[in-house]
Amino acid sequence: MEHHFGRPALYEPVSSCIPCVGFPSVSVSPARCWRLQAARQRGPTGESFNRGFGAERTLSAELQSGYAGKLPGQVHMLNRPHVVEQRTKSQPPTVIVIDDDPGIQEALGRLLRSVGFRVNLLSSVSEFAASALPEGPTCMVLDVRLPGQSGLEFQRELAGAQRQLPIVFITGHGDIPMSVRAMKDGAIEFLTKPFREQDLLEAIHLGHARDQAWLENEKSLAELRARLETLTPREREVMAFVARGRLNKQIAADLGVSEITIKVHRGQVMRKMQASSVPDLSRMADRLQLAAGKSDSTGRVA
Image (cartoon, rainbow, N blue to C red; front, side, top):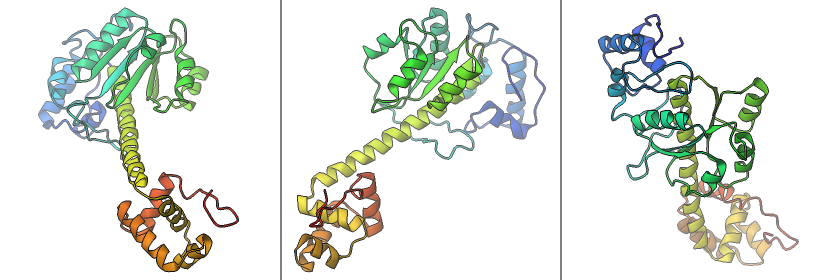
């Protein structure tokens, strides 16, 4: 059921109230559930969200108090198992807004800060290029039409970067081909102005979850690389062969050494890489792209 702040809406059953709001970790009683929806029907009761989005919409005082202390660290999305809930107090989630309309910048800044995000307000892609990238989970709210480089062109440029920031597009001049193009290139959402605050917040939370998962994967991969650096060149060769399913006697024949030597190297590899089993070691090798190595005529990994 669609909810637009400041517009009449039918009551919903209690069971669907909280999923509709989109923040299932906010615990409310059934009576409060009805009051929250009633507050939405009363129209603008909090700070005005928009001057440039068309219709007047707000986050009501009831909803703001209900989300206080819950966002973004404790909120998780319903039916999204890949969402990462862990947040660090030292690195709260950041939203980078790139829009050349000062009114929209101000309105988005107020909304996003009200739910606990750090916000960087920028007017162009060049301003983003000159600024430092936040270290914590980050999501970008990007206008399609910008001075200089457009939002869609910038999205294609970011696709080749090491860290691909999640992007939520907003536009007042969008069409279906444009939205399809943006989504195929990896955008989280493509919102046409005027849009609901709830749609924007849900897209941003999904973007933060995706970026947090990427950051945690990079951290884990960096730890594996650090362990790999402790291996000798011969131990790396043995690790690659083990990951490819070779037996000790086969590896010994490939490398021209004794089977006892291979057993010693293999034990060192398991200890240094902190692998609990051969399948565990194989998964590490896959992540480090060691198992893809090809051997030459002597059996050595290229």
